[in-house]
Image (cartoon, rainbow, N blue to C red; front, side):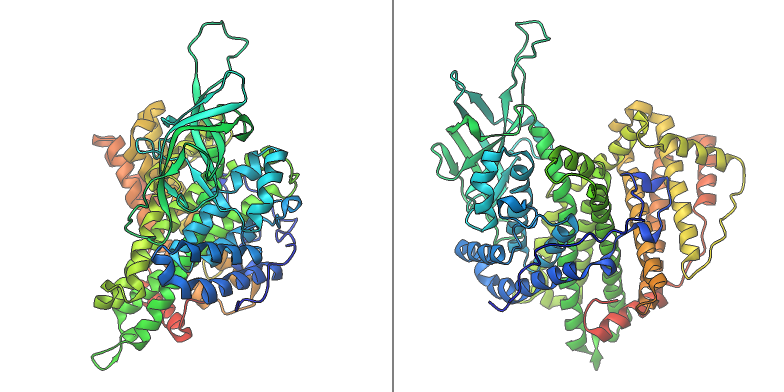
Amino acid sequence: MATSTTLPPEVTTLNPKSAKITPGGAFLITDAAPVDCIFPEDFTEEQRQIAETTANFATNEIVPASDAIEAKDFAVTRRLLKEAADLGLTSVDIPEEYGGLELDKMSSAIVAENISRQGSFSVAFSAHTGIGTLPLVWYGTPEQKAKYLPRIASGELLCAYALSEATSGSDAVNARARAVLSEDGTTYTLNGEKMWITNGGIADLYTVFARCAVPADPNEAPGGEIKEKLTAFLIERGTPGFTNGKEEHKLGISGSSTTPLILNDCVIPATNLLGEVGKGHHIAFNILNVGRYKLGNAAIGGAHRSLDTAIRYAIDRKAFGKSISEFGLIQEKIANSAVGIFAGEAVCYRTVGLIDKALAGVDKNDTKEIQKHIETYAVECSIVKVWASEMLDMVVDETLQIFAGYGFVEDYPAARAYRDARINRIFEGTNEINRLIITGWLMKSAMSGKLALMPAIKSVLDEVMSGPIEKEEREGPLAEEFDLLASAKKTALFAAGVATQKYMQKIADEQEVMGAIADMIIEVYAMESTLLRAQKIADAKKQPTETAIAMARLYAAKAMDIIELSARKVIAAASEGDMLKTQTAILRRLAKHDPIDTIALRRQVAKHVIAAGRYTL
C-alpha cells in the first residue's frame, strides 16, 4: 500500500482545561468565546497525523478503485475495509480491551471527513464503523463484545444497522417487524422486512430492530393489554430465516450495497438481545445523534473534493481566450463553495469539540453517562446534519455548473458527486424530521426549565417593546458581524416568542412554523461558529487572516438574510392586522444592518483559492 503509517496509539485531549463547557442548545441565549471552541486549527499533532493517514489511504487506495466500487464489486470494498482496519481506521470508537483504539470523538470525526473521497465507499465505511458498530459498543453485554468487537476491529466482520421499514422510515418506532420470545425463554423468532439497509448485502453482523412484548409491570393490575415496544437484536449472516433482498438500483452511491432484509421465522438465541427489551428506541436515537455529526464531517470531506476538482477544471478550461477561473460569475461559485466549507468545518468541529469536552471527565466504561452527555447536544447534532448536507448539495451543484456540459457527462467527476450527495438529506433522519427535532427539543427543554429559553424570549420581547436597542461597543475586524450575530439571536428569539404566544402547546402541529424557527436556529449556530473560528484565527496571528475574515463576513451576511426571511414567515403566520404591522416594524428594527460589498469579498476569496489550486486558508 502507498500509505505507510497507521493511526497513533493514543490522542491527547485537545481541549484546554480553562475552556468552559456549554450546555446543549445554549448557544441561542449565551455568547461563546473563541477559546471555548475547537476548530481544525486546534488539532493536535496526533490528530493531524490521523487526518493525513486517512487522506492518503483514501487518495491512494480508495479513489483509484472507484470504477470497481461503482460496479458493485463488493470484494474490492471488503478488501479496502480490511486495509482500513489494518490502519486502525475502523476501530477508532472500539474500546482498547476489544482490539480498538478508543480515541476521542474529534479523531473519529476527522476520519469520517478524510475517508469521504469516494461516496459509495464512504457510505459503506460510515455504516460499518458508526451506526453498525456503536450499538454493540454501547449496549452489548461483555460476552457479546468479546465475541464480536475484536473481529470487527480487525476487519474480519462487517456491520450493518437495520431500522427502517417500507412503512416506517423516519417514524421508525412504529416498525412492523416482530420478535417473539419462546416459552422456555431461550430463543426469539423474528418476522418482518427491513428496507434500504446500507451494507445489507455484504455485512456479517446486523443490528436489527423489531417490536417485542415487554414484560408485565408488577405494579400494574394483571390482565392488561400486552405492550410491544421497539427492541434491538444482533443477527449474524447465515442465520436460518434471515435473507437479503435484491440490491437496490439507486440515484447515487451506486457502489454501496443497499438491500432489504427479510425475516421469515428467523430464530436467534435469546442472548442476542441487544440492551433491554422495549428500549430499542433509546439505542436508535442515541446512535443517530453520533451518525448525524459524523455525516456532517463526511459531507465536509465530499465538499472539499468537489471544490478542488472545480478549481482545477476552472483553471485549465479556456473560453473567450482566457481561463474561466478569471470570470466573475465562476469566481462567485468558487467563493460560495469555499465559504460553505469554511463555515461547515466551524460548525462540525465546534460540535464535536463540545461533545469531547462534556465527555472529558466521564468514565469510558460508563456508557449510560456517555450517551447522556452526547444526547445533550442532540440539537447541535441535528444542525450539523441538516446544514452540512445542504451545503454539500450547494457545492456539488456549483461544481457541476462550472464543468457545464462536461459536468453532465459521466466521464467527468462532477456528475457522480452530484448524484452521491443527494442521499445525505435523507440519511440519519430526513432534514425535515431533523428540523422538527431542533425546534421541538429546544421548546421541550424550555418548557421543562432545562434551558432558560423562555426567560430569554421574554427579555427580548420586553426589550423590543421599550424602544431603540443600543448596540454593544466592539472592536476588531469582525465587530460589525458580531453585532449582526447579536441581532440574529434576538430576531430568532423574538420570532419564536411570537409563535409560542400564538400556538402555545399546539406549536408542534405547525410544521412550517417549526421549520422556519429551525432555520433561524441553524443559521444562528452556523453564523456564530464561523465568526468564532475567524476571530480565533485572527487572535492567534499564526497565519494570514484576510481570507478567513472575508469568508466569515460573507457567511454572516448570508445567514442574516435567511434569518430575517424566516422570521417574516413565522410572524406572518402567527399574527395579523395591527399586531402584524407592529411586529414587522420590530423585526425591521432588530434585523437592520448595512449592506457589505459581497462582490469584492467573493473575488478576494476566489482569487486566494484559485491561486492555491485548491481550498485552503
